[in-house]
Amino acid sequence: MENIAMKLSIPQKLVTLSVLGVAAAAFSGASYAAVDADAAVALAKKSDCLKCHAIDKDKKASSFKKIAEKWKGKPDAEAKLTDALTKAPKVKQKDGTEEEHKIIATKDAGEIKNVIGWILSQ
Image (cartoon, rainbow, N blue to C red):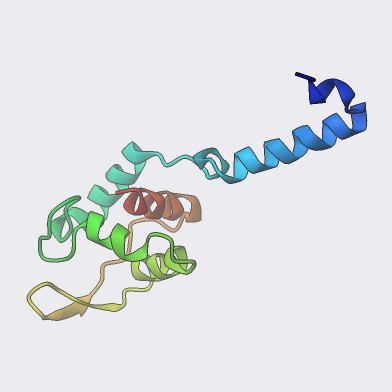
């Protein structure tokens, strides 16, 4: 059996390795910033998110798991969740009542993105 790599020139090998590297990055979770779960939970607690939401069961509002299921894979998920956390929209509760969603206790875009990443990872 011939080794095809032995027949490739140096530029061909570099192009091949580059393509493989890009493909590996594109198809791995490593291409996304890692979620700091401890920081996300701490900010969720500080912002009183856990008064209405739980991770895996509904409370006054949908669980984070249900929110993740609803938004996972949707291209506008991050923008919609950012709006929900920063603009105090009216939201419908499990009992059918509506109230203004609380604003997250930070203005830091990185912290907000981390919380959203954590929610979507549920």
